[in-house]
Length: 158
Image (tube, rainbow, N blue to C red):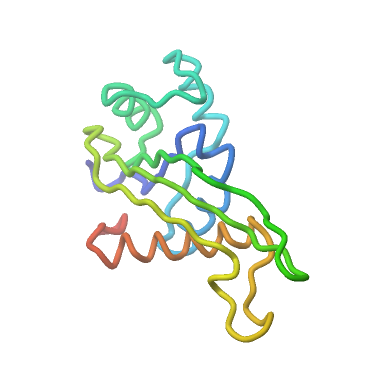
């Protein structure tokens, strides 16, 4: 990779449509990474004839990385997402499986399964309680991204 290459992350379409915006914002905030636009990802999927619910193979991941000049490709699946009614509060639940790929080689770099409930963050009575899936998604994004870097995933500038 040349020294002028941007630090660009690309969320593959199925995950992007459901939760990618919150995750992209967190990646930008935490490590200054850019995130490829949904329209650019859609166009490449259309050109490669990849359906939104389909996962690209290694060669297609390399093409996506090359066309978007993306160092990292993030693919994922939301395994669970709902808002359960608790005792006088809403308890959001979210589970995700994420895979991180090298945009140049298509090689799998990381995989994560993460499941949380809003009530996991309750401190005392209703203080700290997370009430929406959106809020829960942002917190989970922070946790997962922090975990990736703590366990050795390199930041863009490294």
